[in-house]
Amino acid sequence: MTVTDHHAQVPAPVDPESAFSTKQKPLHTPLSLTTELDPPGADRLGLTHEEIKQFREQGFLIKRGLIPKETFAPFHDLWWQQPPVKSANLDPDKPSTWIAPGRFWPTENRWSLPTNWMGDGAWPSPEDERPGATMGERVGRLPHKLTRDVGNYVWRWHGIGHDPEFVRATSAHPNILFMVEALLGGPVKLPRRNRGIYSVFPRLPDDPETKLGPHMDANMTEMQVVTYLDDVEPRSGGFTIFPRSPQLLYPTSEQAHNWVATDASSDAMDYIKANIQPVEFCGTAGDVIFCHGWVVHSAGIHEGDRIRKAVIQDFNRFRERGHMRWTAAGKNGGDRINCRMDGVFEISADLGDDPADGMREVTNQWIMDSNEFVRSRRAVFDDMFEEWNLGERPVEGNVVAETPWWENYDLPLLPKGSVPRGGGGMPAVPLSSIADYEGDGRWRVKTPGRY
Ligand SMILES: [Fe+2]
Image (tube, rainbow, N blue to C red):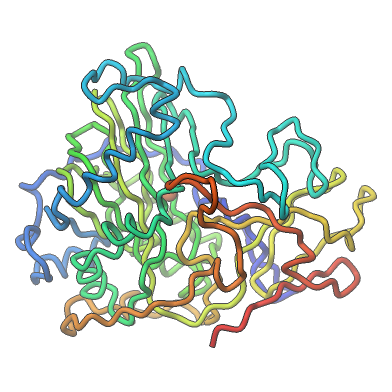
């Protein structure tokens, strides 16, 4: 796959929702990472020599009991009150009701949303006519994203990811920030949201066996972190990663701070899936895995009878950022168009789709905390950990609050009015509200001043 447009000297635009992978199937079954396999130091703050060595060579590290599990109690309570739980009649005291709740979920849900699509409309369903997009175009993420992934039903509760109390209890917990600074180094960007709680449910005995779906999240994340809210035993949906995958992928990117895949990236991805045995993170509530942001990962194999509840998080250094990773929906038969790294949407005038039409739905991957391209376009470093700390400097609480992207653009992400806690999300806005038309099918996005 070639993703570089050499004429324009900027990478070809990529859909912000797309992950990076190849057709190669993973050939090895996961090794369960239980506490016996931890290097010394897993049960305390800071980094031992063995832990630093493991992160440098394999790109991950587990800390046990990093957050006291009592911290999560209010969020477990809230979890049991949410529409995906209520609509399927799950009972906390009857594990038999936890199996395959998706049988009772609606095909489409628009739960916990305000009426603010394109300013003041309801979030559209697939059969709704839309002024800004072809009927059936995706609406992007929902506060409750419900899917059926090979055998298991999955509820991604993105809406809780911007709840300030939830963020304080998870991503911005002092012990988490301590470890992020010890590994990544400061200034750390203060997390303002995470992707929320991802729940994987037990499957019915006759459903297909769970399979791995290895990929890497092609975005600006520098560290990917997963915290368990509940205990996860072997083969019970544990977050699964491919050790050493960041080390193999990193040198193949065209840029150090924005992932730009090349042909060599695909070769490395094939190699990783064919030759590396993945590991699944097993543990108890409050255990945390820290990974390099470009780690190849997958939802775990789940053959157990419990609900796997994990918080998926992204961490970054405080950095100078440019414009948002926007994507514009297809309209009048035209294709979806993604914003380039130089801030241009290039819309060709085919199929009668007027390129000057600014009433197009524009969305972003709002589940992320860092949603704007890093301004630096520099090539990768010879040492992928050149800018990292990895225990070299003491942790001093060097955490900086960047303005959240939704405030930079005055976007209505957070729940308001009658929208319940745990709801809300980023609706589409008109292209003309975030970009200026320059003629010849070129729209240039605005970058709100922040420095
Ligand atoms: Fe992912």
